[in-house]
Length: 158
Image (cartoon, rainbow, N blue to C red; front, top):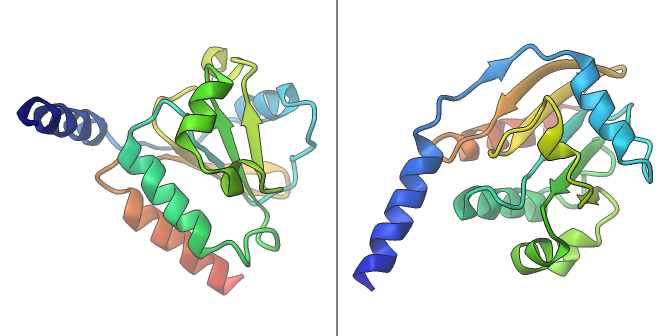
């Protein structure tokens, strides 16, 4: 039990010690990635939340809570959840079926994300308007709750 506690503490520390980034980002990185997901045309959405299946469990838990809380309004608010993973088994073991099968969720097992210029092992939130990327935020365990609350408030305003 003690080893498990130490492991969890180290995992949380690893997730929260990365520097938070708010970047201006070129449209090309996100558009190239979205185009690689040829089954869905998604250029005109307002928000893209990319959640690598290999990210920290705490971040995934917070995103799933956000997803459940905002489920009724998300299709109107133009948000797409994208889950890249190295294997489908990882996705099945990490995300509940109601999330995986939602029309706002795209599952990506192409591995293109891991070779793309937008790659991060932390969740990323892209803010877009009229097909252009306005900003990108890398969501860390230390601030993910605050960032998702702000996104919920944006949903309320729109």
